Length: 245
Image 1 (cartoon, rainbow, N blue to C red):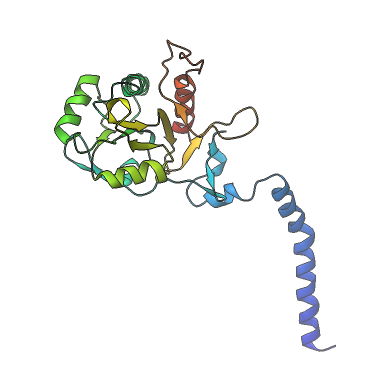
Image 2 (cartoon, rainbow, N blue to C red; image 1 turned 60 degrees about the vertical axis):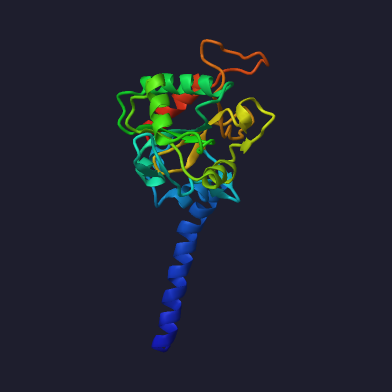
Protein backbone atom coordinates (compact mmCIF):
# COMPACT_ATOMS: atom_id res chain seq x y z
CA UNK A 1 0.00 0.00 0.00
CA UNK A 2 1.40 3.45 -0.95
CA UNK A 3 2.15 6.26 1.48
CA UNK A 4 -0.64 8.26 -0.15
CA UNK A 5 -3.17 5.59 0.78
CA UNK A 6 -1.90 5.51 4.36
CA UNK A 7 -2.36 9.30 4.52
CA UNK A 8 -5.97 9.02 3.31
CA UNK A 9 -6.67 6.32 5.91
CA UNK A 10 -5.15 8.50 8.67
CA UNK A 11 -7.16 11.56 7.69
CA UNK A 12 -10.36 9.53 7.48
CA UNK A 13 -9.72 8.11 10.96
CA UNK A 14 -9.25 11.61 12.42
CA UNK A 15 -12.46 12.84 10.80
CA UNK A 16 -14.34 9.81 12.17
CA UNK A 17 -13.06 10.40 15.70
CA UNK A 18 -13.93 14.12 15.50
CA UNK A 19 -17.46 13.27 14.37
CA UNK A 20 -17.99 10.74 17.16
CA UNK A 21 -16.73 13.08 19.89
CA UNK A 22 -17.71 16.61 18.87
CA UNK A 23 -20.76 16.50 16.59
CA UNK A 24 -23.12 15.21 19.33
CA UNK A 25 -21.88 18.03 21.58
CA UNK A 26 -22.55 20.66 18.90
CA UNK A 27 -26.03 19.27 18.29
CA UNK A 28 -26.71 19.30 22.02
CA UNK A 29 -25.62 22.95 22.27
CA UNK A 30 -27.88 23.96 19.41
CA UNK A 31 -30.86 22.09 20.85
CA UNK A 32 -30.32 23.82 24.19
CA UNK A 33 -29.99 27.26 22.53
CA UNK A 34 -26.40 27.70 23.71
CA UNK A 35 -25.30 28.64 20.22
CA UNK A 36 -26.48 31.94 18.70
CA UNK A 37 -26.84 34.73 21.25
CA UNK A 38 -24.16 33.61 23.68
CA UNK A 39 -21.70 32.92 20.88
CA UNK A 40 -22.44 36.31 19.30
CA UNK A 41 -21.61 38.01 22.57
CA UNK A 42 -18.61 35.89 23.51
CA UNK A 43 -16.23 38.52 22.19
CA UNK A 44 -17.57 41.17 24.57
CA UNK A 45 -18.00 39.36 27.88
CA UNK A 46 -17.74 36.13 29.80
CA UNK A 47 -21.16 34.63 29.11
CA UNK A 48 -20.94 32.44 32.19
CA UNK A 49 -21.48 35.61 34.26
CA UNK A 50 -24.61 36.82 32.46
CA UNK A 51 -27.75 37.37 34.54
CA UNK A 52 -31.19 36.12 33.54
CA UNK A 53 -32.00 39.43 31.82
CA UNK A 54 -32.79 39.18 28.14
CA UNK A 55 -31.04 40.86 25.23
CA UNK A 56 -33.33 42.77 22.87
CA UNK A 57 -32.90 41.07 19.51
CA UNK A 58 -33.45 43.05 16.30
CA UNK A 59 -33.12 40.97 13.12
CA UNK A 60 -31.58 38.16 15.21
CA UNK A 61 -28.87 40.46 16.56
CA UNK A 62 -28.72 41.90 20.08
CA UNK A 63 -29.65 45.59 19.94
CA UNK A 64 -26.80 47.90 20.87
CA UNK A 65 -26.93 51.62 21.64
CA UNK A 66 -26.03 53.58 18.48
CA UNK A 67 -23.23 56.12 18.51
CA UNK A 68 -24.21 59.52 19.87
CA UNK A 69 -22.49 62.71 20.97
CA UNK A 70 -24.21 65.60 22.76
CA UNK A 71 -23.36 68.38 25.21
CA UNK A 72 -24.25 67.89 28.88
CA UNK A 73 -25.29 70.32 31.61
CA UNK A 74 -21.65 71.25 32.23
CA UNK A 75 -20.91 72.10 28.61
CA UNK A 76 -18.94 68.89 28.07
CA UNK A 77 -19.37 66.68 25.02
CA UNK A 78 -20.64 63.24 26.07
CA UNK A 79 -20.80 60.20 23.81
CA UNK A 80 -21.85 56.59 24.15
CA UNK A 81 -18.18 55.83 24.84
CA UNK A 82 -18.46 57.70 28.15
CA UNK A 83 -20.98 55.09 29.27
CA UNK A 84 -18.85 52.11 28.27
CA UNK A 85 -18.33 49.86 31.30
CA UNK A 86 -21.37 51.34 33.05
CA UNK A 87 -24.95 50.19 33.57
CA UNK A 88 -27.27 53.07 32.75
CA UNK A 89 -30.87 54.15 32.29
CA UNK A 90 -32.00 56.20 29.27
CA UNK A 91 -34.86 58.72 29.12
CA UNK A 92 -36.10 61.36 26.69
CA UNK A 93 -37.60 64.45 28.35
CA UNK A 94 -37.76 68.25 28.26
CA UNK A 95 -37.42 70.71 31.11
CA UNK A 96 -40.71 72.56 30.55
CA UNK A 97 -42.75 69.34 30.38
CA UNK A 98 -45.91 69.86 32.47
CA UNK A 99 -47.06 66.23 32.55
CA UNK A 100 -44.95 63.07 32.79
CA UNK A 101 -41.37 64.38 33.00
CA UNK A 102 -41.58 65.46 36.66
CA UNK A 103 -42.71 61.96 37.58
CA UNK A 104 -40.01 60.35 35.47
CA UNK A 105 -37.23 62.45 36.95
CA UNK A 106 -38.51 62.05 40.51
CA UNK A 107 -38.24 58.30 39.92
CA UNK A 108 -34.75 58.68 38.45
CA UNK A 109 -33.61 60.67 41.49
CA UNK A 110 -34.80 57.79 43.67
CA UNK A 111 -32.89 55.34 41.48
CA UNK A 112 -29.80 57.59 41.56
CA UNK A 113 -29.88 57.59 45.36
CA UNK A 114 -30.42 53.83 45.50
CA UNK A 115 -27.17 53.26 43.58
CA UNK A 116 -25.14 56.20 44.87
CA UNK A 117 -22.28 53.91 45.94
CA UNK A 118 -21.79 52.46 42.45
CA UNK A 119 -19.28 54.27 40.24
CA UNK A 120 -20.36 52.11 37.29
CA UNK A 121 -23.98 53.28 37.30
CA UNK A 122 -25.27 56.24 35.29
CA UNK A 123 -28.26 57.90 33.65
CA UNK A 124 -28.58 59.46 30.19
CA UNK A 125 -31.29 62.12 29.78
CA UNK A 126 -31.79 63.54 26.29
CA UNK A 127 -33.80 66.75 25.82
CA UNK A 128 -36.33 66.65 22.98
CA UNK A 129 -36.58 70.46 23.11
CA UNK A 130 -32.92 71.37 22.60
CA UNK A 131 -33.72 74.84 21.23
CA UNK A 132 -34.92 75.86 24.70
CA UNK A 133 -32.95 73.39 26.81
CA UNK A 134 -29.54 74.99 26.68
CA UNK A 135 -26.59 73.96 28.84
CA UNK A 136 -27.55 76.62 31.40
CA UNK A 137 -31.19 75.51 31.52
CA UNK A 138 -30.19 71.85 31.94
CA UNK A 139 -27.77 72.72 34.75
CA UNK A 140 -30.47 74.66 36.62
CA UNK A 141 -32.93 71.81 36.08
CA UNK A 142 -30.44 69.21 37.32
CA UNK A 143 -29.65 71.24 40.42
CA UNK A 144 -33.35 71.70 41.14
CA UNK A 145 -33.95 67.95 41.15
CA UNK A 146 -30.81 67.10 43.09
CA UNK A 147 -28.80 65.38 40.38
CA UNK A 148 -25.54 64.36 42.06
CA UNK A 149 -24.34 61.27 40.16
CA UNK A 150 -21.35 62.35 38.02
CA UNK A 151 -22.50 59.80 35.43
CA UNK A 152 -25.93 61.41 35.03
CA UNK A 153 -25.71 63.59 31.93
CA UNK A 154 -28.60 65.77 30.79
CA UNK A 155 -27.87 66.34 27.13
CA UNK A 156 -28.77 68.77 24.37
CA UNK A 157 -27.77 69.03 20.72
CA UNK A 158 -29.17 69.14 17.22
CA UNK A 159 -32.88 68.37 17.25
CA UNK A 160 -32.77 66.01 14.25
CA UNK A 161 -30.02 63.94 15.84
CA UNK A 162 -31.87 63.63 19.14
CA UNK A 163 -35.10 62.66 17.42
CA UNK A 164 -33.31 60.09 15.31
CA UNK A 165 -31.71 58.64 18.44
CA UNK A 166 -35.08 58.47 20.20
CA UNK A 167 -37.22 57.08 17.40
CA UNK A 168 -34.72 54.89 15.55
CA UNK A 169 -31.94 54.29 18.02
CA UNK A 170 -34.12 53.38 21.01
CA UNK A 171 -37.62 53.18 19.52
CA UNK A 172 -38.78 55.51 22.29
CA UNK A 173 -41.28 57.82 20.60
CA UNK A 174 -40.61 61.56 20.58
CA UNK A 175 -42.16 64.28 18.40
CA UNK A 176 -43.22 67.90 18.35
CA UNK A 177 -46.97 68.29 18.72
CA UNK A 178 -48.51 71.72 19.07
CA UNK A 179 -51.72 70.19 20.43
CA UNK A 180 -49.96 68.29 23.22
CA UNK A 181 -49.39 69.86 26.62
CA UNK A 182 -46.02 71.55 26.52
CA UNK A 183 -45.81 71.22 22.72
CA UNK A 184 -44.17 67.80 22.60
CA UNK A 185 -45.11 64.13 22.83
CA UNK A 186 -42.72 61.48 24.09
CA UNK A 187 -42.53 58.08 25.68
CA UNK A 188 -42.75 57.77 29.44
CA UNK A 189 -40.57 54.66 29.43
CA UNK A 190 -36.96 54.04 30.42
CA UNK A 191 -34.46 51.87 28.55
CA UNK A 192 -31.87 49.83 30.46
CA UNK A 193 -28.36 49.42 29.06
CA UNK A 194 -25.66 47.01 30.21
CA UNK A 195 -21.92 47.65 30.57
CA UNK A 196 -21.26 46.71 26.96
CA UNK A 197 -23.92 48.99 25.50
CA UNK A 198 -26.62 46.36 24.89
CA UNK A 199 -30.31 46.97 25.64
CA UNK A 200 -31.48 44.54 28.30
CA UNK A 201 -34.71 43.71 30.12
CA UNK A 202 -36.46 40.98 32.04
CA UNK A 203 -38.93 38.69 30.30
CA UNK A 204 -42.66 38.40 30.92
CA UNK A 205 -44.60 35.29 31.90
CA UNK A 206 -44.65 34.20 28.25
CA UNK A 207 -40.88 34.49 27.84
CA UNK A 208 -41.01 37.72 25.83
CA UNK A 209 -38.62 40.60 26.66
CA UNK A 210 -40.26 43.45 28.50
CA UNK A 211 -37.97 45.83 26.55
CA UNK A 212 -38.81 49.06 28.47
CA UNK A 213 -39.76 50.09 32.00
CA UNK A 214 -42.67 52.40 32.84
CA UNK A 215 -41.23 55.59 34.31
CA UNK A 216 -44.42 57.52 35.02
CA UNK A 217 -45.68 55.69 38.12
CA UNK A 218 -43.89 55.93 41.46
CA UNK A 219 -43.36 53.05 43.85
CA UNK A 220 -45.54 54.86 46.39
CA UNK A 221 -48.40 55.15 43.88
CA UNK A 222 -48.22 51.45 42.93
CA UNK A 223 -50.80 52.05 40.15
CA UNK A 224 -51.76 55.05 38.04
CA UNK A 225 -55.30 56.15 37.17
CA UNK A 226 -55.33 53.74 34.21
CA UNK A 227 -54.52 50.78 36.42
CA UNK A 228 -50.93 50.48 35.15
CA UNK A 229 -48.50 49.15 37.76
CA UNK A 230 -45.31 50.88 38.80
CA UNK A 231 -42.12 49.36 37.38
CA UNK A 232 -39.48 51.30 39.25
CA UNK A 233 -39.04 48.49 41.76
CA UNK A 234 -38.32 45.90 39.07
CA UNK A 235 -36.05 48.35 37.24
CA UNK A 236 -33.97 48.70 40.40
CA UNK A 237 -33.81 44.92 40.74
CA UNK A 238 -32.60 44.60 37.15
CA UNK A 239 -30.01 47.36 37.49
CA UNK A 240 -28.59 45.48 40.46
CA UNK A 241 -28.36 42.31 38.36
CA UNK A 242 -26.49 44.05 35.55
CA UNK A 243 -24.07 45.66 37.99
CA UNK A 244 -23.06 42.16 39.05
CA UNK A 245 -22.31 41.00 35.50
